Length: 142
Image (tube, rainbow, N blue to C red; front, side, top):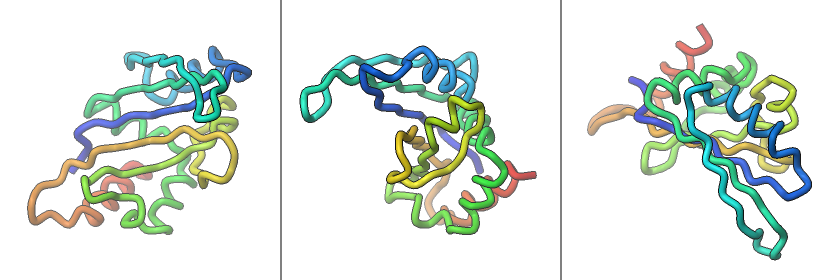
């Protein structure tokens, strides 16, 4: 069991230090990853920059393993079933302030600026998706 791939997405405003956030996203996603930068406007019309790191199969697993051990353990304690959607995608959110500080820490969406992670689980008909994801996260913990 593994991952088919994944991505990280960060929405930033014009006042954020985009270079610092990009550097942190590169650390999280791996130096070989390509980070797309999209400029646009928020729903209220303010300038917005979206950073997207698309991850290969190996890169996605390595990036997920960059989460702090405490965060990975919290994922297991909370139960992964609430984070996996019908398309077999694992959704996680990490704190941007912690990320630029060099640590990938799981957070709730109400905890301030976040990076959204989407990881496509490698599962096939008849597989227990939650059990497979739980085993994968347990292996990342070690």
